[in-house]
Image (cartoon, rainbow, N blue to C red; front, side):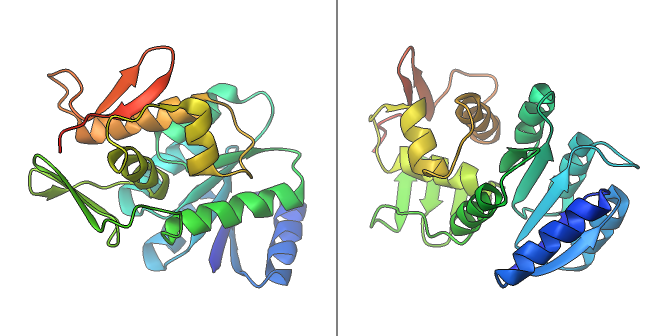
Length: 228
């Protein structure tokens, strides 16, 4: 697994690099957002870990620019007073975040969980293809096609869509979705589910109509409309 660490704190970056290399990861580093973007455009990484506070651009901008060129999983490092930026990063395509100071074992657990999802090893239905009207979800190929056009989804967005679509009409609470999609290693809050549902809806729903696929059961959770 190839990891890119983007952080201008030299001691933290070196320590994290050393710890991950001991676990068999191949690790590269970058000190500025522009350097990381150049590296990502030239090579392939399995995950990018980056700090929100960088010398040349903020983490939100980094997240946006990475998502313009790559679907590589993103793990954000934040401080305790950056709640709004955490949510904004999730809005713009980050997969998860860890708050500084962090336990290295927790960080490694998050990395492993993200990489499992990105490799498609999250437990799924035996059905290889789901068809709902003009919506086609290919579980093995991890592709979602709507009206003949492939939808660009992150690993967790796809896992969330697949879970709901393979259980049409079943309402999942936010707690259940956190446990199933993010796994027991996840220590975040319920807003993470709402952010990912909102992002997913923005990609698959008609903005001029009521929601057609992912619906809300008020006070309970979310479900996929039973259309097949």
